[in-house]
Length: 333
Image (cartoon, rainbow, N blue to C red; front, side, top):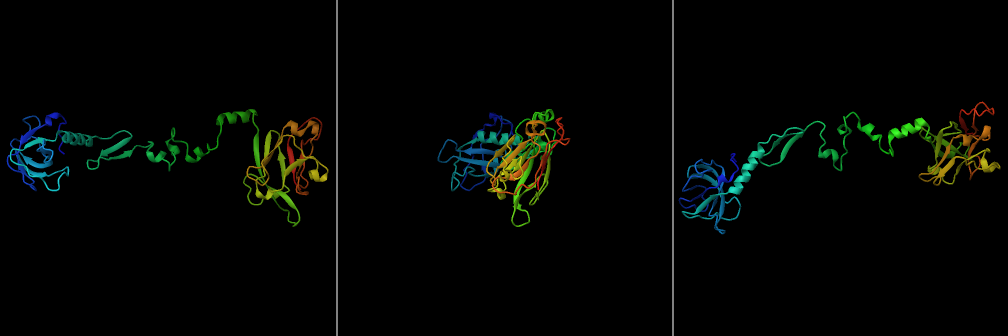
């Protein structure tokens, strides 16, 4: 609609100067519509014919007029009647003030220029906001259930999605963890995967090991150098370890050679061959013993002989009684 001042001064009342027949789309008024008694109101605008008669009241939209002559109007814009009613000469006519005010308000809203993070216009036909969002603005698509917030929207945008993903699984302050490692307050854990397979003879199962970027079946008779200050976690969850118990002993082949299980700083979890199963050994002075008391360790299966081979653990390289401990060597046959 043409922009009008949204005030009650738009109120206007007159009468019909002549009959308005059913189906007619023009009429003549006794007085010309004005906004303040003198200033003409330009079409389009709404009029209510016979407003106080509940059975014959009709709202029309005037689309063309000049003075008291309404040359074009849309009948019954409310859709109240199947057939347009007939109005007699002298029937009261009022301006639809409330409807006109809302039209005027909408016209003014349509003139709003959106700025800042949101720019664009408001459509006069749909009243929807057609906008574009400034760079760095988080919109609904960034946070709804089917989308994650892009890392570029966080802080200064210098962290990539890949880097942000590294935080997944962090359970405590990263800097604190780093400081604890530097100060020796925590022990680093080295993961090693264990599998069981035939050694190629067709008659002997042995342990195979994988670590780091290793893949496939693994390597048997592996030689490991374990250093003090580290934990070595043997993942025994592979299904091939079902019925095979991964153990350490001071005696080659352990209990199958009159030896016993070595348990100092060794922890186990779960059942071999099942998810979450592991055997972990932490290398500390207590593990190494006094002056080489624990000079050699072997890995073996407590249920089946021959699976550990000749694995040996050398506690210190100098071999003297001065406690010069450089490493922890674990060897497999």
